[in-house]
Length: 322
Image (tube, rainbow, N blue to C red; front, side, top):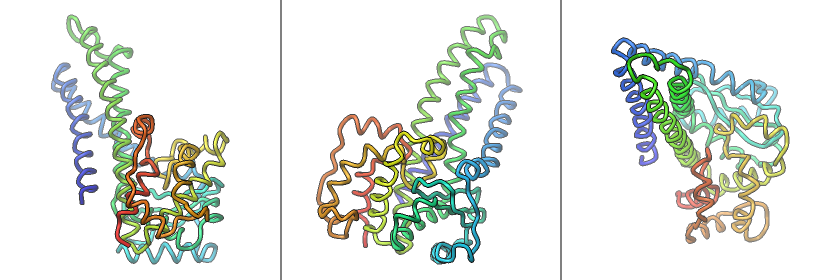
């Protein structure tokens, strides 16, 4: 409930910031222009909402598969959808070999769950089900559409900042208009930076929330922890490759951030005490007793990432009931 509350508060804060900027700008320019800017912002958000899924599907080279082509995958998705009381999403396989999974869509009825070819090669059935439960939870929570809309707010603020400082849109409105425009532009740039951090924070919240959702749909925490562990190792092999660069723009939709995997290897290997390549229920229980301490550098790095620090994330999993 606390994760859900934080997400709702974040949505209210971000749209409040956007509304405040538009009203302040419109008040300075005149009431008519305020309405114009609100309409423009809504149009921008609407376009983002409509084309977002198409961009994800195109970038990830998704091929929609039938039950005949992928019976086991379809069965797991259908079982999870029934457990979550959701319509069965479309099922797709991305042609990318980098191991991961993702969900997207505009509504619960428009949900789409996809896996890459790479993840099918490294996870067993229980681990894959845990990952699919995580993705199904994103659909259940409707956070794919929320994060898509929220990500448009920093872009709108950036456009306002650019147009006021260099676009010449407001410099001649009144005497000294150029100075006002610079001040407004600087304020919008500051809010652009702040809202970017807030969107990233929201993205991290939704990952914790989806992890919890996977467990509520019947997966054991150590299966999801093992899947995340394997994904870190699998993704680290793609460091610096062209394929990793190709999926950089949609990494917020992934189960984990593949660009961070190389840096997460060392701390995660400490959890795998028997070096089996998995995280057992006993090893996860040991994590529960330990305090997670991050360096200042790791804490700062997490502020600029779409996913939580993996050690913190597995620590959260260790606290969930089996």
